[in-house]
Each structure stands twice: as C-alpha cells, then as structure tokens.
Length: 196
Image (cartoon, rainbow, N blue to C red):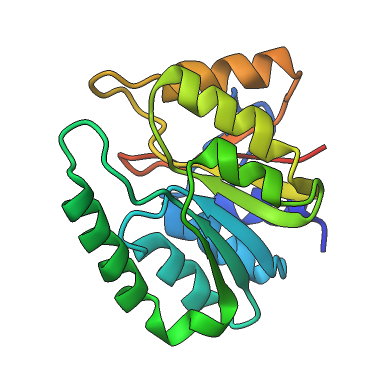
C-alpha cells in the first residue's frame, strides 16, 4: 500500500496545504494509530510509555503488531522511584493481554537505542522527555531505526511549560529537508512523517 496516499486520504490533506500538513479532518493520535494498522505496520516501538495507555490502543487496533516499549520507569523531576515503579506495574497490568507481543526495555532512551537494529522498525512513536535536547536526540537516533517508507512520529506538538518539542521537530524537519510532514488536530498533537 502507498503510505503517502493512505495518509492523504485518512487525514484529508489537500494540495497546497502549508507545512505541517494537518488536513481538514478532525484527526487525533488515534487516527494515526488506525492508519498504522491499516497499512500493515506490524513492528513498532514506543519511546516513553508511562502507564501503557497508548501502546494498548496500538496493540488493540492491530492484532499482528509486535512492539518494543522503551521507558526507564525511573525517577525524574518530582517523580520518585517508588511512583515510577508503580507506573511500571500499572503499565504491565494495562498490557497483560498483549504480553506475547511486547518486549520491554527498561532503560533511558539513549541507552536502549543501541539495542535496536537500524532500519528494522515499521514505525517509532517518541513520547519521552520533552526538552529540546531530549526530543532532538530521540529524533536523531530513533529515526535511524525506522525502515524507508516507515513512520517517524511523536507526541505533544504544542506549547507548554519548559518544553522544546515544537522547536525540535521544526528544526529537524527543516535541517533534513523533510518537505511533507503532518500533525494531528487534537490539543496534544502528534507529529509524523514518512521515513526517506
């Protein structure tokens, strides 16, 4: 299936839209999740999993999907290790029906990335730390893990306190001449493009 055509149809993108393309359909992150299933993307990775809610949606939509879930489930800012461990247990419970299709990597993103073969993933969904540096590093290193024609995506493309997501995504797409990329229309928008 032609992924570009599938995106344009699913998101109702029109010629001459401005970047990032968002189409005229009231699309959400689940719209992208549905598209990933429809085009048969069966091997993906989520970087930054928290309680597993998004992974559960992806796994429910695609019965053939196998996922790598990367998250240190460790302390940061005001989150203690005890609370992080509780989130990990909640995640495992939320995903207990999909255990045979999940590989957990409980590590920092930049430590885990070396365990994944370049060009092996159909998609990656980045939702880790939200600072400019962290997002930029995730994009730079995790993009290499996605095969040509796959999808590179991430969450929270909107302005909120002490984040650099918009700046990181905009800078990366401009620096790498990504001339077609997309965002969903929900408040906590998802950004994505097709890997060259």
